[in-house]
Length: 200
Image (cartoon, rainbow, N blue to C red; front, top):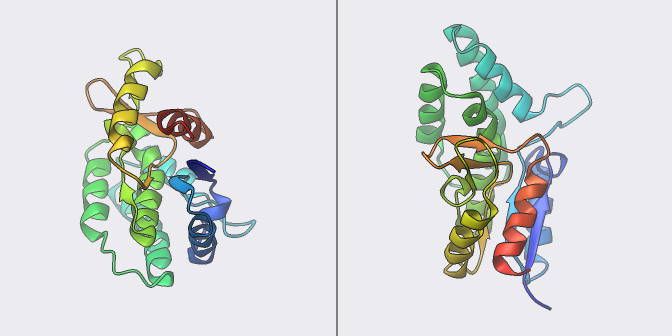
């Protein structure tokens, strides 16, 4: 039928069982060649969304003990997904780099975006798809406005060389490389950007 872009929200990626369902959905249709994931959402009514936990990390950056505790909990959630899917993926160096940047005063947008980033890394590995970081292809002006022309030019060129890919939702980057997020729910915007780039 043609190329399809599949976007999955946080509830669809809340734990390993939900990830497994997403993997089956993508593999169930050969046309689903590009996947846009959100950060893991709530596993149950009393649970926290990973993005909310990451925002909390930003608020407590000056408190090393609390930052280490909350970020450690976030890492354990992602590790549970990796283990539950039976993957050999080792993200310990990535977790360490994110923590170091947070402890050094990383921006709110950087902190908020890491849930999608980590979901994307895991999903790409599980599917055997290429991981494409939107920070390298979805652009914002220095005033914070989305730049559709520069984005389309870069992303279309990149994905033309990439028959199947996972592109995390919710964020891109300023012209100087700093992470910039869309508003909450912005993974839907990323899905439409990717769909335009690949003429889905």
